[in-house]
Image 1: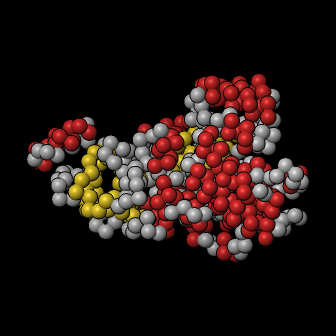
Image 2: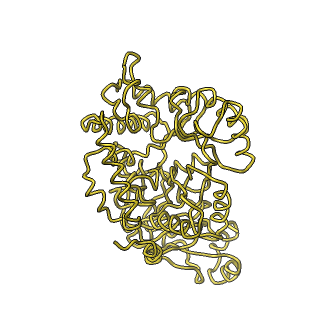
Image 3: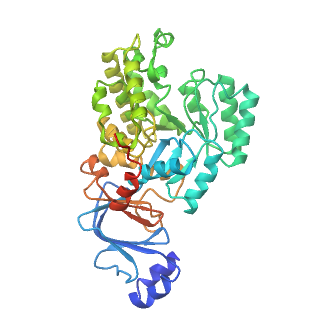
Length: 450
């Protein structure tokens, strides 16, 4: 189909597309500024042709004809970029209303791919229904039920569960805390043997060094890095670590951050920092401000109350120190930047819908957190576009001919200001155009009256 369309563009428009549109869906972005995410550039005044869910052609606005039967989308003074990936999401349920709510929140925010980090059997069918278009929603990467200290009973059991999840068709193995070193090794060896990635938390009994040696696909939350950065003489590892070891910050050997970042790059392990999750729980932002976030209208009052309580309880724990927490945020940001500089892969993920993370909205907050850590807007956006495609070996992530048409049309340039990634004029999901008004209408049905 793509070859036919490209050949047709060299012919007369009417004669060609009378044939093509008989079996193809065609949409054209006209006079749009393309942010291809292949480099930190903007390609001005382009026409982008989409046929049957794929980008067929991109060219100068004056050189590419517009098929008379196509859906025409005005891109004047707007910016077209790839859809974003949320690489640490949770599918909270499979009931129709739950799925529609989750899907609408993600897609309305330009999230066209999600990686579900706590799977169940129903997610396999959900994944396939999204992909086929039977259900409205983003592309879904599905893990199986997590392997953790309570679900695994010995190394042989870890081996068995990995093989069963691979056979069932899950996309990857989710690792949760509590595994022994022997169980983690057995999990990793089985996963590597059968060819299924394993990702998530680093078991405390193993540590980051062993996770890197075993070929862990992603480390999420920067889990285990603070413990790995403790000097051998430090007593910190035996004391109160707090949420993801943040209270160890004063004991860390910060000079070792570039060393562990280089080791991570050499191992080929990627990181999903979920920085916004940690920052908003331990920073000094008043809970009243967090409670009043506009996106909270898509969450029940009871859930918001639970989030507020979680932050208050954490900050009131004996051993919690606000100055140490601020230092932890600083060191996590430095670690993110050093991982990037070392060439270790970073992937966009916020851990939605965990505390204060409303699906879709929290992904954009994570982009801002990455920029605060020192990445440029382009580098931050790449973690959710081209980097996701590279990690998944998928056909998206950039705006180019032959790529999947999962796209976002923005009203301002996101390379100038990362906040512009939220100025969404519309989203294209598998070639289907969803204007802002339709996305807003989808969202409104899930708004909670206060």
